[in-house]
Length: 219
Image (cartoon, helix red, strand yellow):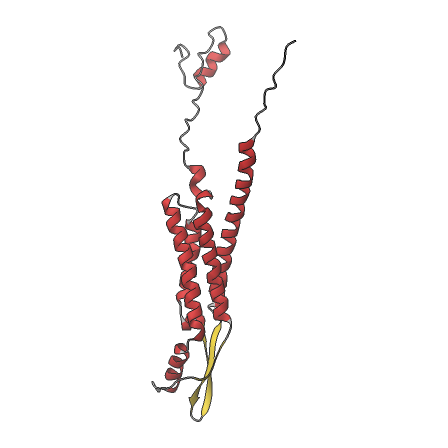
């Protein structure tokens, strides 16, 4: 009595393993884009709001003064623009270049956040306005108060930093803009050689002449 051995059927492990990886790459890509774009938008908008308010003594009265983020420091907005450029450039480069651009993205977010946080208690911009308004270089502002906009700007810088960290961690798995335009090294299929027209079929001879071919030449 013969025995039939069971042949194990190979399981599609590679496909099953690659599906979660692809989904994770798409999620990290979407998160990086969302965090970077949202962070830069927050920094640019919040840095244009009023950061500090105060008063300057003028002729026995008080002149209200205010300073926005650009008056205090233009660094967060400038770094937000750098971060946006780096976010786009992440998808335009490959290999070591992508690591460098991702690092620039993270550093621009860190710099924007720190500079905004440092400007949250700044009074130099209002003191300068007080000196210009009163014509007294020794004049300073009083009744000084600060708003929450510097901290909102710092939060936007933190979002850019997170986008950069995601790019550093997962950026090597993200697609590149120019990927579909580059050759992958696989040989292109060769065009099928045209067969010589059949002399017994006159219509094929006429078609060959219309194409500018010599029907008497063998393929």
